[in-house]
Image (tube, rainbow, N blue to C red; front, side, top):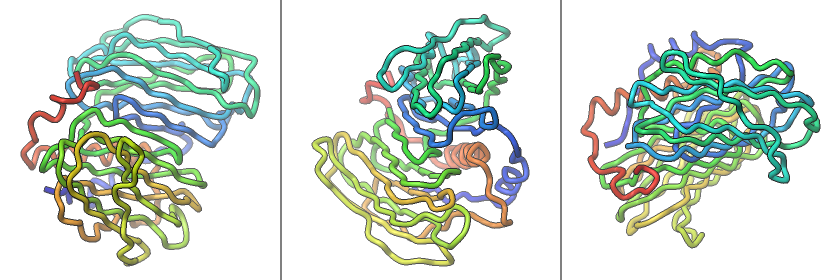
Length: 346
């Protein structure tokens, strides 16, 4: 039932393909998701928002990206797929708001080329050091696919290419210290979800996964890197809360093996909406993994693949996880009816 496909050759390929000097790339893989980046967007730090929404029977997209302005000028270019059907995204609107929720800029549609639609904006007069939020809305008819490039300066960057790549509803990525995901699918008996946390920044981690469960058990195994060096994560706590914000379960620490700590939990009798909260501190970046399944068997230690002395960037991890998820889906029976009860999947 649990996914255990970790192919060394694929990982080596992803690490080798890591692009140095590329934009900071953040991946959105749920219909509704928010992220907050501590690093300021300035001339040396462009950002790409990569919308890789798996086919979950369609739904409204609501993505937010909160950041610090490192320049008074900001420009944006976006591309989204209007074909093929499995990633078609329509009704796109991209707005920039300040901390008081005042509208600062909106995108201007620039046309369709082939099956790629595009828009842009440029704005000036931002307060350096102030907080702003970019909001991406639209509708994914099945899954969704878009890219948004943000850069300091008056000239909008080129329209991002937005290639169509395979995705999986069984794999999800947190790549900012502060982030929340709202999974549209309903988790049923036998379902699983692999959540990976990969951070390039250091600081307090607060990641929230919002789940809908049909009733019954849920178990999780949590692994994080604790060895001194890159991606060390300390002070980890994982809690499950119900819709009334009552604590349902907390992880139990199981020990450390080869510089990787491990904890797990198992709880029964769940039905409705729950929040899984991962908190801790990333000391030099951070790295964790949560293996969730709808059963009462608390999982054993699952090490995080490391090696080679090279830390892949979040975008490489995203592509790696997509590959694992796709293979896992192909090798085991997909559960039917994940989205029958979820309003966001309709």
